[in-house]
Amino acid sequence: MATAWETAAPRTEAALPDWLVRIFALDVRGLIALRTGMAGLLLVDLAVRARDLVAHYTDAGVLPRAARIAMKWDFSEPWWMSLHMLSGSAWWQATLFTVAAIAAAMLLFGYRTRTALFVSWLLLFSLHARFPLLTQGGDALLRCMLFWSLFLPLTRSEVRGQKSEVRDQRANDPTLVCSIGTSAFIVQLAVMYVFTAMLKTGPSWRYDFSATYYALSIDHFTSELGYVLLGYPRLLQALTAFAILLEWIGPLLLLIPIRQTWVRIVVPLAFIGFHLGLAATMDLGTFPWICILFWVVLFPPAAWNGLEQTLAVCRECLGLGRVKQLMANARRASQDNVALIGSAATNVIAAFFLGYVVLMNINRLAYPRAMVGTPPLSTLGQVTGLDQYWNMFSPGPYRFGGWLRIEGETADGRIVNLYRPGEPLPDAKPVNVSATYSTQYWRRCLVTMYEFKEQPHIAGGLSYFARRWNGSHESRDQIVRARLIHMVEHVPPPFEEATPREIERRELGVVELNPY
Image (cartoon, rainbow, N blue to C red; front, side, top):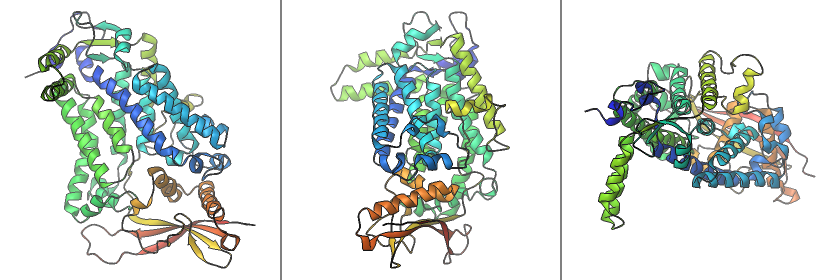
C-alpha cells in the first residue's frame, strides 16, 4: 500500500512536479540530525587532531609551511586557501582550533546556525589545506556536505522562516522541505558512490572479485576481525560483489520516483550496514561514521515517525511521559506537508554548483586532475572546497601489505626506533599493524609518505622525529642520520597455497643531521 508521501497531491499550485518532490525532499527531522551530527563529528575530529597540534600543524612539526608549499602534487585543497598557513606557531593553531570548536558547539545547539556553519566549513577547509595528506574520503565528503548545508534549513525556526510554499495549508510546520539545496545534498552523496564505482576498473573489482581480499591485506588499516576474514576468500568474493553492486545501484534507486518510502528506508539501511562492516574490519577513522550520518538524513517521514513512536513507547515504559500524547504528535507529523524553500537566487547558485560538481566528476573519469573550463572557472572547485575525486581503492587495492620503520642512526652506528623510542625496531611484521598508530592522522601521515612520495613531507617527517629524539637524549646518543623504510610484503592471490611471503625493504628517504 502506498504511503502518504507517495500519493499525496499538492493542495496548492505546485512550483515543482510532485514526482520530483518525492525524490528530492528531505524530512525536517533528518536535517536537524544532520546539524547535530556534523557538529558532533567536527568536535570529535578537532579533539583527535588537537592531540598532535604541534606535530602536524606548526613549523616545528612534520610539515613546516615551507615544505607544504614545496610539495609538487596538485592537491584539491590549495595551501593559499588555508588560514592555518598564516603562522607556523602553536598559539595561532590553538586559536584557530578554539574558534572552530566554538563554531561547532554553536552548530550543535542551533545558535546562529548560518554563521556557525560558514565558520565551521571555512576552518575545516583551511585545516585540510594546511596538511592535505592527512585527509581521506570521509573528510572530503564532510567538507562538501558542510558547503551544501549552507543551502539547507537546519533548525525548525529556519524552516518556518524560509518556506515559500506549504503544500498543506492546514499545517503550521512542514514535515518535508525541498529545494535545489536538498537536491544537491542527495546528488552529492550519490555522486561519491557512483563515480567511485565507475573508477574501480581493475580486475579485482570486475572479474575475480578479489578486491576485498587485497584491501584487507594492506595491513595499515586491517582490524583483528579483518585478519580473520582473510581466511575465507569465497566470502570476501561475495562481499566484493555486494559492495560494487551497492555502489552502482543503491544511489541510482534514490532517483527513481517509485516506492520512494521503501527505497529511502532500504537503501540507507544497506549503506549503513555496509559502513558498519567497514568499521568492524578496517580502522578507517571517522570515514564510516561520516557516511552513516549522511545516509540517516535521507530516511523518509515514515522512518522518523516510527522512531518517534518507538521512543514514545520507551518513555512510557520508563514512566517519562504520556505515550498517547507523544504518538498523537507523531501522527500529526506524518501528514508529510512539503515546503518548497529557498529564494530564486540561492536556488540558482546551488544549481550552478551542482552542475559544476557533476561535470567535474565526469571529466575526471578520463583524467584525475581534469578541470571544468579555464581560469577562473577551473579554480572554483578549489576555492569552494568542492574539488573532489573519489578514487577510493581505485582502480583496485594495492597487492602488497607491510609496515614502516623510522630508523635513527647514531654517530657510533647504532640503529634506533625513532617512531616509538625505547622499543625495538619492527624487523618482523607486527601482529596488528593498524594498532601501531596512535590516531588515524598519524596513520595517514605515515602511509601517505609511501603513497605520494612527496620528498618535502618525508624529509620534514624524518627531521621531526630526529629532533624529538635528540631533544630527549644525551650528546653521545644523538642521531646523525634518519631513514624511512617501507617493509613491503607482497600478497599472493587468494586461493594460492600458503607459502612464506616475500619481504622487500624499500628506502623512501634519508635525512642527514648535525646534532651539535
